[in-house]
Length: 101
Image (tube, rainbow, N blue to C red):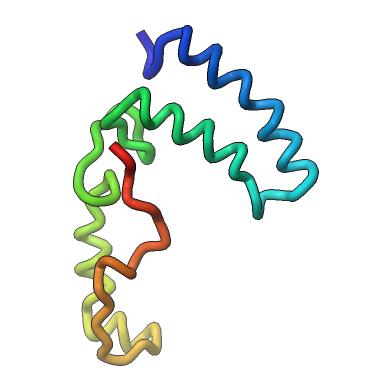
């Protein structure tokens, strides 16, 4: 069995033409029609990690970003990036939505 059952696949597959049309008409800036495809798969597959579908979702964003957060928190890295000694709340550090489970 794959990530989703065939019956769900057929339902989701019907949304693809609208997504393609939206991309042709509006480009990739406004692809709400395409986001519904991803959202549908996520809601059916539940705790799937969208960064690596063979894994389950871990943490707030379905991936362990702690190594990157530690790296970006280093004073030398902040100086190299020219951001000074500021603290950024993890809540505002990522432009991603929290996964809907």
